[in-house]
Length: 184
Image 1: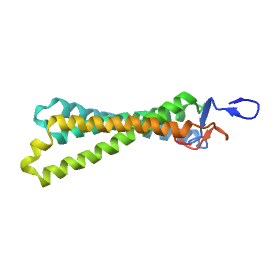
Image 2: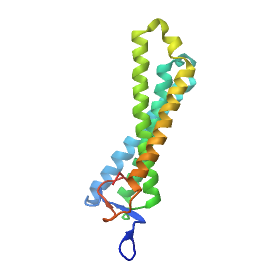
Image 3: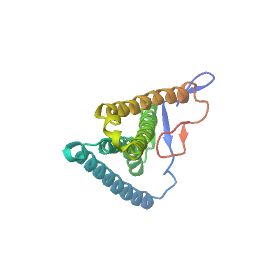
Image 4: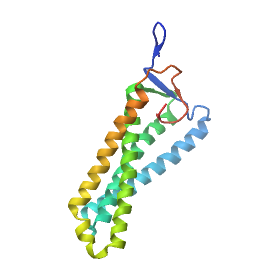
């Protein structure tokens, strides 16, 4: 933190989520979270590979499922690797730009995932309530537009929330009571 005349500029944040834990607890958590992260990446990668390469799964439901798995990979990759690093190293600082980037990605991917889940619910609604018109209503073109809309609103939401979070200078300390950067 750099001091100025009447205030300060935050150049880094200190993540204190696991600071009070013992080294054996942190080692156990590291092993557990690394195993779960690896499993989630492998399973989501398998879903992505199967839904995007198998021509028998060429339906809107599997198209959305593949994109949901991709968003899940993006979402967990924004937080878990940094948490694993902070479980191992003593230095728990994160630069301002890294924190800003992580928060943007969490906001963006989180909202895109929620919107995509709503579109998946709409897909199931059409399949159940309008089965004869399902192929016309949920064409490949419509599915691509729905996924693009989810990403677009996720990107816009990320920009908006970043602006709202960082538009004013920080007047308190630079400690974050978590293991990843979150909205102040």
